[in-house]
Image (cartoon, rainbow, N blue to C red; front, side):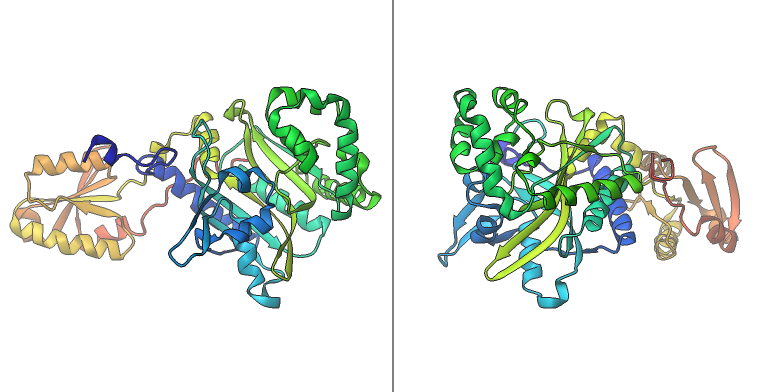
Length: 429
């Protein structure tokens, strides 16, 4: 094997210590908070039939046209590694019948897009997403935005910005497309090659182009809401009013567009100053997806966890500071102490104490070095004297204080294990 054989595929990464501590804490915090909002986890397959994404995302989207990992399996089926999470959740909901029509679900897991690897973009990335199934309702949309703001704060993120707009009603789309084509007619030559195609297929996507020349053109366009119905504008007004009552700071951006075809009514995007030029942190919105003969409506958002972690580390969060230290390290002097410590270690673990010990029978000096490397809070030392007396030497590794205890006092001192606080938690906010 060559040295490259030990490296992950380009655009994909191994997740391990110390970064994994931050990943685990993000997921644990999210699961706790989402349960308060009455959301429940769903785990859909990472591999779906290709038409699940073609029908839901739209066959003119860049995701479907350029970025999906699709292939034909041995049975002749067209399959795709999921490029996003909503379509699979909706496929699940549509198959559950009436019982799932007001489901509140979330997912955490890997997604795959065949993109050119660059800062902030990976071929395998991870998303946390939330889907609240139900008919259009301004209060539900506002709740989803409030939940996302709450979650970002609980993770310790600050300086994020939330922008809100509307995609309008399905019947508004033809008027929006015609209005944009008319407004862009004299500027068409200034657009990039992709936006020339978008002008014909779906001019709304031009508003989402990241190229400088197209952004300059878009800045001079009238807001898309000017082409929409009164009903669509009133719906957005109601969402913004509820967010104001909830004291959730958002900015109305009349040129904000989410790139997928299934959005209707409210859409929003979250950016963070710590991410540089590619500052998009997350996005969400209300949608209506049709699979087969079933249409599922809902509102939700998805966040790329790599982007969240980049923003957190940019704020100065050190993943090493989140490592959970062992409560106790057991040190043995002699074979009998070693045998008894094996039993003690299992006893403490069953009582909720995290602990470890050297299992190779090395010297006491080597065992103490291992305790230091593990950064344990306490060390329990047992030798001939302690075995005869039925006692234990408990050393506090932070202040160096050592005391001799019997078994009841030792158990009382060490249990229950001390929890480690999440830095910059929402209580601080």
